[in-house]
Image 1 (cartoon, rainbow, N blue to C red):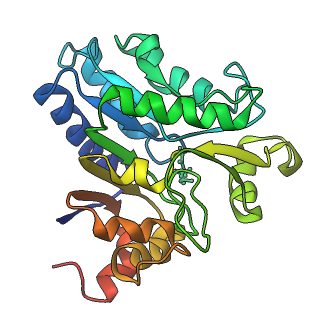
Image 2 (tube, rainbow, N blue to C red):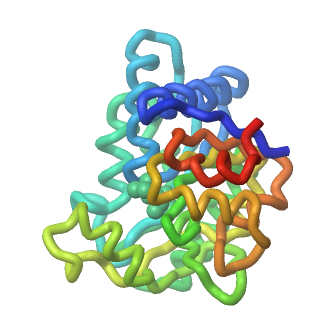
Length: 249
Ligand code: F6R
């Protein structure tokens, strides 16, 4: 089932997303949460921190598994996704760091790192709620438009579009790593529930194509149409095209 929640703006999107994540944490205190980085979920993470600080949430038994990590960056590098998760969420809540999983960007053997990560996801026993952002080209995690869907954790060469989009966090585009580890489509699709977040007009086309266009690896997020439980929280701008095509009731 696809459920779309429309938010007036980023604040409302963040609160709605945080409500869905915290409902999961409350209903299943030892849940496995699939986490995303990027700009979109930051507001939701801040809201979760606030509710944790008020005493409303307990993450002590929660385990997290992140979608992706740049190859070549250490967890201390300010642009690594490990650093991002620690600063934007993990350090501010009572999650135990050994219960958080992110690919190791410095692993010497990429293939071994991919199987280690797949095993880690499997050992956790399945993701209860997977948070996703979406790229302007329809990517999820770092599953870029391609001629086929990659199933499990793999190393990916980032497209110029993605490197340029992510260059805003680096001093120059040349500093953006060329490769990243990402969960594959099967890892993502195995999550019991998906929470897809999108904000801004730069996501409107990708969101429309993903939810209502043909299912194709050229728009990786379009595979979500085959998932049983997808919740989309998006703001007016990201939903603009979907609304114009008459899909929002
Ligand atoms: C991040 C990730 C990416 C982002 C996507 C959107 O872990 O997997 O797929 O979700 O690139 O990024 P933002 O939110 O920065 O627009």
